[in-house]
Length: 485
Image (cartoon, rainbow, N blue to C red):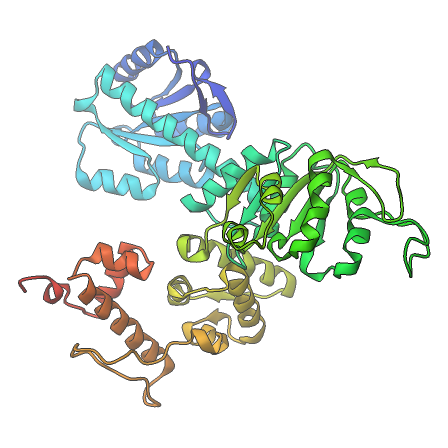
């Protein structure tokens, strides 16, 4: 009997002994055999011998089901297993389905997979070990997917959108570090969403019901730094007409977010050392110590290690702030998230403006291929301008290109030995010019990689599937770039 925890269709976690598997086959003897084998694993089963009975049972019990084993052929029914699969996936997408068949073919397996089946087994290959391996690996995979889904749901509430492996690693650290009281340093390029990550860390912490207070380091005047952070007493300096609490006071029992900590002048950094270590502060003009309960989250796009070597950042402060670190990857390393980000902002726009806009598939692909040096912030800005200025309901490549930063627009490629040279002129449409630029870039990269599509895709920062689609679209002969051709 298995004793680990696995995910059920409702998204909750259940002990393996409480797993229930629905068996759907028109042969009662075969169903009984499967039930005996699965029962030996410590799992529960329920059998249905017709598609109609199965659909009725699922409707009333889908939340308690962990998985369905579904036959394809049903002799005495107008429905077959693929019909049941289609309806189940549509109505109950969280219920995983493994297809079984006595007449297994590649076509059936491919069709079932396209409809949403998670696996396919031929009856002739079923044995106790084979069935246990397939069921166990499927349920464990679904558990991982369920955990990942929960992680992404948590960060999505904070406006962090995506599902890439790179983002999942960030989400995992947000949850793990967030539940501690350790100080976290968030690093990453400008525009990657460091403030959103800081807010997500606070949101999953025990401090979530108390404030997260942002210290905008670059915009605090040096002469007011201590007053802004620690407060002051009336008359302690010119202009101090009343007693004032500082940002440390405001963040008491919550989190203090030190945004752009790398911009803090060296001469001011010493002011933070003791308050961070002891959680004790003194207002300007006061000799009385005050204790505050604050968790510190910092963010920077600067190289703090390099700054320490150059004598521009105190090592003591670095180690106090960096008990944990989360590095946010640039958008170029998670391009598969771009369609989700686009869809997120598109829905927000359509709801707010009562609009019905959409992006064409070509426009989505163009956005994925584009170099976003300003990361998510630049993409968001571009989307906002496009959505508010383009009059047509369907947004095309030319619409995006029209609002792109001049430094990001596609110009003619440098001359090369390729016979596919071109230059952008006033002849033809903008779409044609972009396509020619795209084709030339692919040809140039394939030349460098000797026709190796995988390497070329990596250099272009796109998937192999996307590159293959472009190669077919532009009718590029890859073989002529390979050695010996």
